[in-house]
Length: 312
Image 1 (cartoon, rainbow, N blue to C red):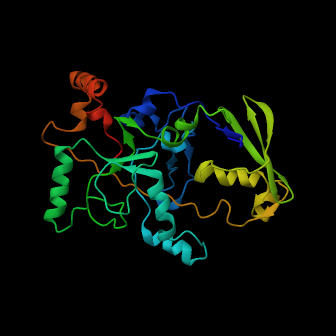
Image 2 (image 1 turned 180 degrees about the vertical axis):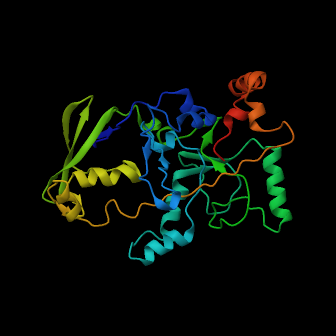
Image 3 (image 1 turned 30 degrees about the vertical axis):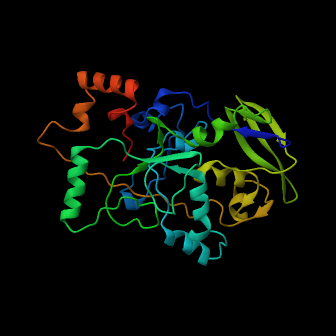
């Protein structure tokens, strides 16, 4: 209670039915209000195209616009980071934090958490085409994996999702909502941070603007930069933290040399294959005309149906 916390969010509050309704993620891919709508630079390996890079611009960040699929990293990734010198980042070290953060609604072993704020569960809905796909995988000799988040990701199965009671369970819903009423927490939205203010090597505050009006906030304890994998490096670089050559090129005074800032960003590819089905049993048929009306009523009456489907 003695610690005052200021939370700055560049976007607006997360008040939208498209955020709450799981299927609404399709409306958020390129939303002008809740999405930064970044694009990658053209690259030869993708035929010179600009690949979209959606990033959340609201409380909860990208967890408020994503497909709600919950996938932990593979153990080998964390162990490799640890072997490269990042102490404390092995799978053994990060697993307790995965467990502490989640409440897994399914049946799992001791690698899964119970009682945490982030609700993770299995898809309640099943679809005949998805079931047929899984059966075909098993017929081809691959195993069914009921829980790919227990440290073994090999196999086929339904995705686990961050949904609770038929609604998206974002980081804001899980971690921020329970604390919103605390008198020592202040939340400012539409607050765009430009840089961390440094005195020597110590962070003493942040510079930001609200609707073009410049402000500063000073701190006694710490500044936590949590702007996502794309924009956190930008905030650091504008603060003078990063590669000296790059900072000087853009006229930014070097306050701390840290060559890894902004480098080695990686994203996952998601190849999509489209198939024409000879029966009228796809989600297309379930989300058009009277079928859509039925699904909307079903969702608002019971929190089930097609509108609870995620990207998985």
